[in-house]
Length: 167
Image (cartoon, rainbow, N blue to C red; front, side):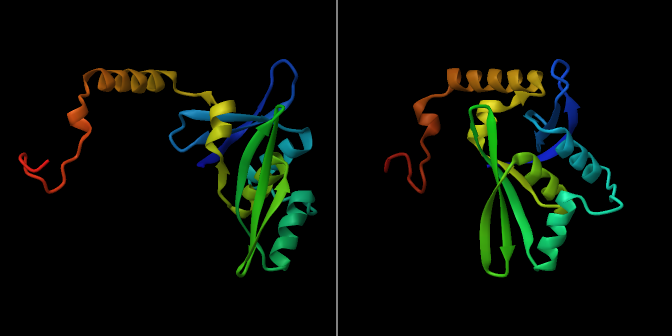
């Protein structure tokens, strides 16, 4: 799994649908997830630390968790099926931990309100992420190809505690 952060909300130029954009720690990969208008507003409010005059749905959920002395340990975006992302909220109360099915947009809105980490399975990133820094990706690929062209099998063998005559 790779920890990601919310980079912001964008709008698809063609469909005008909101997209939450997650980025990895190196900011080399971005994961765009299409979300609804209400979830976009809720995520923006959390990013901007705008408390509503009355609790909205995500605020209500966080208030309920706190009232029952539960905490969100993390969220995990674990799969992508038929262009739909799936997530879970991992919630803990004392020694008891539960994984609760959630839409990624709702899970992200809750994670932002509880300062909980957002994790994404590597398979999801491989299937749905977009490169952010193509130059760095290409440089890394060139360096790896050069390494493969120049490596010898004996370079990969580690001799631990053996002298040259003992191996």
